[in-house]
Image (tube, rainbow, N blue to C red; front, side, top):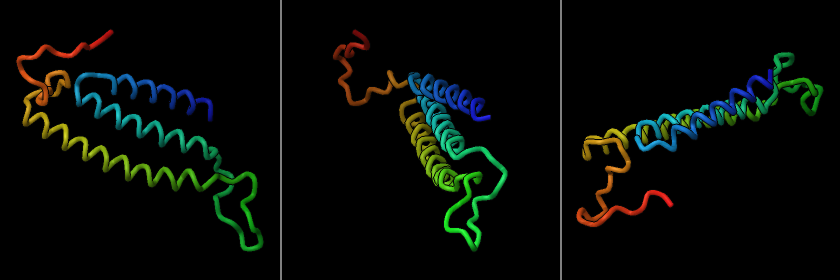
Length: 125
């Protein structure tokens, strides 16, 4: 099962990087959201996918038994979900506001700081 999740994490990472390299800001926004989900799934997979024993330490033990799920990745995922959702909401509002002001979501056309009569900088080498 971990192999399937590892392949899925790889696909999500590659799709997120592909979307973040786009010139449209909405695609970049979706790529960032997909990247957050890929990281959450990676953390979830690193904590072992077992249902045998819940991560509760019994009264007579000092440490968890070896066949339990690791609770630390689960706590990290809960924190990462809240942070990624708030970051996504901020970027969504920022993208919408930039579209309202500039009338485009193409990042090449969002060049307000550059002079209008000057030639554009090189886009490649």
